[in-house]
Image (cartoon, rainbow, N blue to C red; front, side):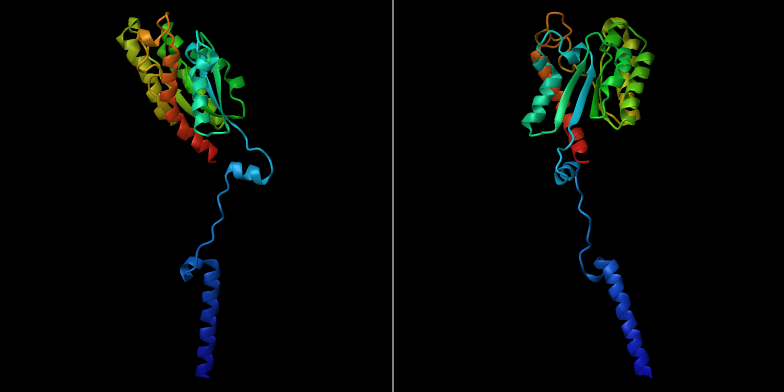
Length: 239
């Protein structure tokens, strides 16, 4: 009778262990089975369709448009070349720079700029706000609305900072300069502190007007932006 009970007990324990092993293989020395992570490009390939392209849009003014230069010499086109040279096949960098644009103008045309394919928005506005002496609070409010709209549509944001000219006074310069790092921190956006770092005020890097970069200056802008944009692009492509 005792042997029978022991036999039943052993049998029951074996059954429990078998069930436990099937549910939790790692506890019994087996490897845990995990579902593979399938990237967007892999899913598209399995479905026999081409993976969606990723658009990086640069929303800016004449500095972005490449005033006085060929379109291929403007920094958005140079960014495209960098992505192409590094083997990216689904990245399209689109130049949405309009000469004379303020942050208000950029905000007003944002709806048609932010198409569903835009996954990264580079905001390079504010230079004309400063040149016209517009209130920094107004510039900040416009940039906030642009960033919020982009993020609500699922786009990552890179904010390119600007500087105010010295003739507007130290207080104006300080208030204006503070806009960009404050917004980048608030919205967790990437930041290039000053789009014209190492370029502004240097005659050999600017055209005759002293304000718009030469082709070499535009290349320097692309060189500053690319290390910030590349990991953002990798993030989007890995989703």
